Image (cartoon, helix red, strand yellow):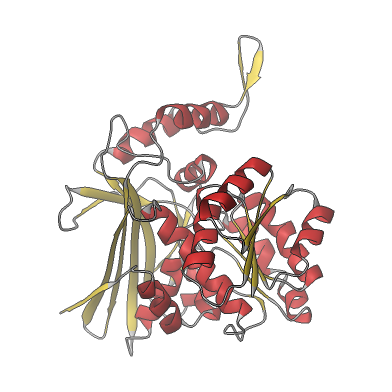
Length: 378
């Protein structure tokens, strides 16, 4: 099978690495980026003649259509605002398509392409990274262990192994995506109804063995399509982001001061967007690419008992892949391959928790040493 990866940044590189080194069915990979040198360097670093680098402007629909042709599946690791047009290009060219998502409104537009995708006999599956992404399939995997399920609580975070002040955080993915998570509303199920909850609220403490006290708080996007999928089936479902203690209050202060606003203000006779300034400052001053952890916890309650799934992943020193790359890019690679192999029987534009066989997905995670610790309690 031949797979195309759009974007040669951290996640694009991680997806291409998995396709080449962990995926025996993949015969050829194309990695493409707006910056040709990024794609070329990524291909050279992966080091095989089975990968080809290309230059592409993801905003140029004609270029995208030409590049899609001849590929069995496409993984989008570019910014979320391209994903609707990329999904349309997939329909036009008959290539299966998945992406890393990051925005509920774009996902809704992609899912609205269901009839066209069915007619093209392809699968379009948005939001296939970590969260939303891997945890969505794990939610379905855990739910199947119950006769009657009442609650699902999801907690996920990417953390630096060596936290540094002032935020004890490092940039492991798009700063635009991070700000969106922190300022847009969260969709959850409460008492059997879908409701919206402000992000950076409902702070709680939690613990993982070997870690200091951690915190978790509401953020946008992590539930993705899960509230719609589980509406009428469970009473409560929510998602919170994990950080080192104190992070939420510090970042929320910047939000309250208007530093995440996209409304222009005048500074020295120049129109300036505070959000743009903050994003640039975060990229300038926060560490990136240091050794990291990814922590995942899903808690299921039903049948009078509780099932907990825990994942603790860390930088793989043998490959140089960060925990965030492994747990974000690998799931997208797995899903792209499942589509290309015909293991996704559902055609059309479909949420992954509906389209993907959770048992096969978990087996593929474990083959990549992304392991789930499962425990039951009364």
